[in-house]
Amino acid sequence: MPIDAATAMARARDNFKYLAEAKDDAHLAKLKGGACGYNQSLLIAGLISPEQLDQLNRELDEACLAYKSPLA
Image (cartoon, rainbow, N blue to C red):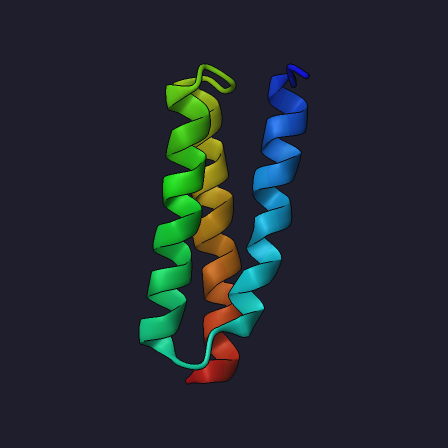
């Protein structure tokens, strides 16, 4: 079943919750890398635009900062 860009972006944002599982900064970096790859795959599949990819990656950076604070 085809999905639209809004649904694809919502699913990508839903993946941000996994950042909370990070045990340390290295683990957080791996989780972030996985999320970046997922976001990139949405672009490659034509589900989101480059601008939407940039937006998701900005939101991912903000989410990582929020989860990184307690790890420090």
